[in-house]
Length: 199
Image (cartoon, rainbow, N blue to C red; front, side):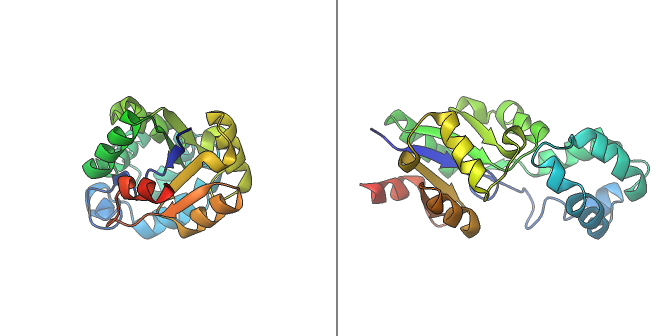
């Protein structure tokens, strides 16, 4: 029986189009101070958004007027999602090869609902994987143990048949503790070489 690949998104399959953060030019482009964005949105609101306790749009409607009064939530989301959407073609090619050899591939990621849909529909990743398992839908996130247990229930596969590839060492450690195989991703690797190690 083939293992099931649980593939992280950001930092593995998808990257920012700009060096560093997608928000590198946000002050110049939208008039939003990135430090205030980090403090008032990501530090205060994002922890609840990422696990589905709060919806993204209402939170932005509350936050954005203090950050940049003329920027609508839709404009901010379009800016963010479009600049954080460069697919790694080599990784995607390996995904295709693995699937053609009978490996089920799931995106396994900390995301809120709108970007999860953007990844699968607008970016078209839904055509290349079995599905997406993400934090806002589960109500828990990596590296928490309930995330891994819920993800395994979703695939229906045994814990030790899951193989996480993730750029976070913390997530890799947590996955192993949950009974999964897990590999820390760096840009000089390939998914095919990782699967070769599994024998």
